[in-house]
Image (cartoon, rainbow, N blue to C red; front, top):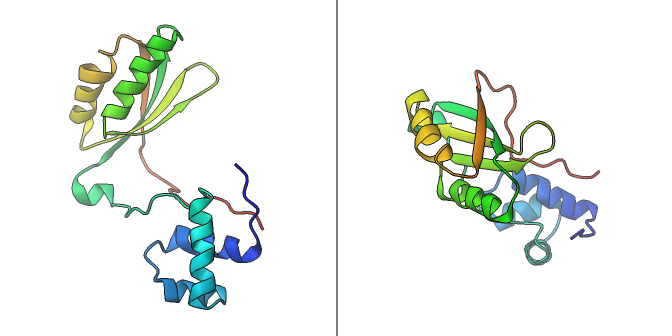
Length: 156
């Protein structure tokens, strides 16, 4: 669903992406509106599905999650039951942060975060490879991150 956004909506979205905890009053001041019109715009953006869940991003290293793995997965077949089994397995594991169906050599790309390599090995051998839908997994480990953001590129 495409929503028509004006420059004020874009400013609101940009501020929310970078400062999710900003107060309504501070947001209104930053975009040059009084509190009520700003609040109505925010509600409109929520109802349109542009604004999603409010979350707090945690620092993984601060809570002992030091390994990020990118797992490229090939399925045995693409039968709807196999895909559903794989999807259920992925959704059940908090370590799997992202799952994307991909074109090319592999069927899926998973972003996985774990405490250490041993924890990843347990997830891989104890869960991912035990899923009957999975044929092959090729894993790469992140050595260093140059950029990491949740902010989307906004028009204008």
